[in-house]
Amino acid sequence: MSPDYEIPRQKILARLRFENPWWISGQIPEDIHRMPRRLYFDLFFPKVFDLELRRAIVLMGPRRVGKTIMLYHTIQRLIDRGVHPQDIVLVSIDNPIYIHKSLEDLMHLALDTLSNANPKGKFFLFDEIQYLPGWEAHLKVLVDSYPKTKFVVSGSAAATLKMKSKESGAGRFHDFMLPPLTFQEFLHLQSKEHLMRPVTISFEKKEIPFYDTIDIRQLNDEFLDYLNFGGYPEVLFNQTIRQNLSAFIRDDIIDKVLLRDLPGLYGIRDARALNRFFVYLAFNTGKEFSLQKIAKDSGLRKEEIKKYLEYFETAYLIKIVHKIDENARQFKRITGFKVYLTNPSLRTALFSPIKSTDNEIGSLVETAIFAQWMHRSKIRLHYAKWRIGQKEGEVDMVNLSDSNLKPAWALEIKWSNRYVDAPRGLRSLIAFCQANRLQSAIVTTIDQTDKKNIDGINLYYFPASVYAYVVGANTLVYKG
Image 1 (cartoon, rainbow, N blue to C red):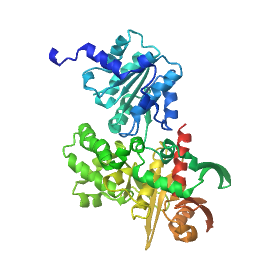
Image 2: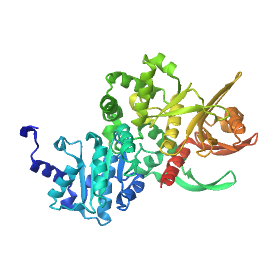
Image 3: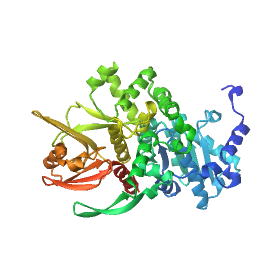
């Protein structure tokens, strides 16, 4: 490389000092310090702090969910736990000043800046790691060469991060997925968890921990706000962004993924077709699709559709849910599937916010509840749909047991109180439970809680907002 293209060493060292102000001040910038931490932080930090865990931590997730802020909060917690501030190094890989530098080069440059050549016991955090080609090989070398040093990387291009970390990091990397906000976190970050209270409910002759609300009307107002604006922390704290949510999500999240990240990763030439296809899926979140229907609606070839769906899912924009029949058998040939956005506010940003009485509310409530469950790593979510003669049936959500692939539970997602007084209208749910020897099922409502026994099946009714909160809260317990 020509010397004219080389960045002077002193400029790089000065940039490293600028990116790590705690080396002098002893704390992270005050504006970040004041930001509330996501609830996932308490699961993430112990993995970073454990120097005996000889693995690099790979923090991944979609754009704008707070990964960089979590790294800053991690730095402050390390300092609070007694780690010397100069033993913590943050490098933002997306800065062009670091071009053509390996992770090991950057580590040694930071040590030179600190006049400390020994990396033992230090913490190196590399943000936006996807901008370094072959990052997984670089990281593997560091983990193998410096077993007494902790390495943490983060990145937004979930597709390549997950693929590469699995391919090259076996036994050396620990993946940590930071999803969009759960409804529980949405309330927590706004200091509104006082709307919920822990309770114990009787479910199938067992006393289980649950939650109730002290004010269902206010909780439902918050839930509607979550459907419209709730996936991204910045939206909660920046009124300017909230007033122009469409531009924020389109410019900072959707366009950067669809027009830059995915085309760059997979060599996609027609990024506009990719964009149009995503808008089509977003508008129809929660609907059933077939490859034939999508091809007819979009004009795309089936092979293109399959690839695009895979790209969207690995970039954590959508979740594909497959169909089972009335006996919970999976179909040998995929004839239908549903597509859910990983956060309902992706749809409202592309189109418009919704009201509780709009026709779209049902599909967005369903999307939101699926989104709470998507954060579980070991869950087999399906929907059931069948036709026998003239009779058709459908159940919104079924979880198949890992051990025997039999239904563990079933759920019908409604934004209606109608089925509390007319439970026999849930004939598909009741028939599915009977066919699969399930003694109970859950049905969501607008604001009613109840229990009914119909033909030997216990139907438990909970408001959709309460149920969404419970799933998010229990997911943290499960992951912990």
